[in-house]
Length: 396
Ligand code: LMR
Image 1 (cartoon, rainbow, N blue to C red):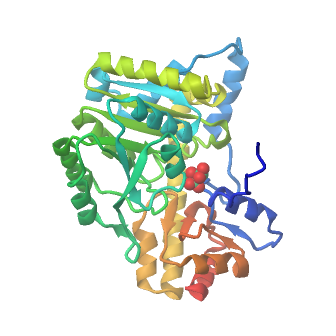
Image 2 (cartoon, protein in one colour):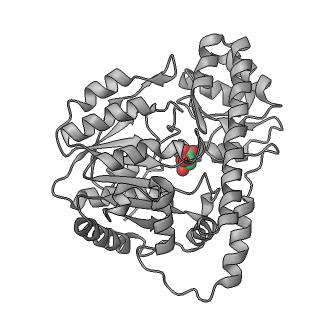
């Protein structure tokens, strides 16, 4: 049965994580997998999460099944967090969320829903996009195409080329957009660019699929959702995949949600029934624990405030590191490389290095970043900034 299976190459991000763990060098630096790290190089359990977790465990009465849609309080709170409590899609009953196992589960759920809609759309993803978007969407059976997005030399969005491509797409095709903190590039759309894209989505009757996995880590909890809010207020149909891995630090608990927006509350209810059926056929029900924690935080004023402060602190720390790295790179690589890092936002930056240079950083300097030049800014520290900048200067 399995005699023909050949061993596959490692996943580009998870393989790097394993290689880093195996490296015994004391000087090794992990700029690979996207997890937040504090000044001690640790990925902490957030204060609000720890407090909420204790409360959840103390109050829990049962471990019985939740259901394919998961925790409905969590679902409602996620819609409010992303869209805001007065969003027209919410007040008109046109949007519903379903809990999913992480942002990945949410993305897959949305992909499966696209497969049961009136036609099988092509999904257009940015070039480049997060490596795992490709299997998550295409393994559901969807065809993927790429639209121009990133100008590597300047580290900015190729906006004219992007808009031009979107303007050629047939009605009913799906456009995957990163809500904020573009992964892998850190090059985000401005609000003016979101407005122009929204006009094209409406005119050409394209369906936006917004992936928002880093809300709060770019410009702010509300500011990072403005693009998604605008799109959801303007189009008849949309999907939004949300992750609580990064902004709640709940990575291994696998907490996320898929939101579906349609033209009427009746259609949204119908779509939600399909989503429950799809979930039932894949994971049956999402794990409860992480969603219960998030629901506890967001429904408690004090915990919520503490969580917001923690998110703001994570964002500010990454901005400080970004600026320090940019200043150090200005000395070792020149102003252009420095400005790439300075302009980008969120957890990642993609710098113009060849895959061979990224390999050399790993093998010669024990600095781990993916071969496309993506680095996790949270993996930098004020102590390691100069070492990293010198090493990059040596390999480029
Ligand atoms: C990343 O991009 O590094 C994270 O989202 C982790 C992952 O699953 O790839």
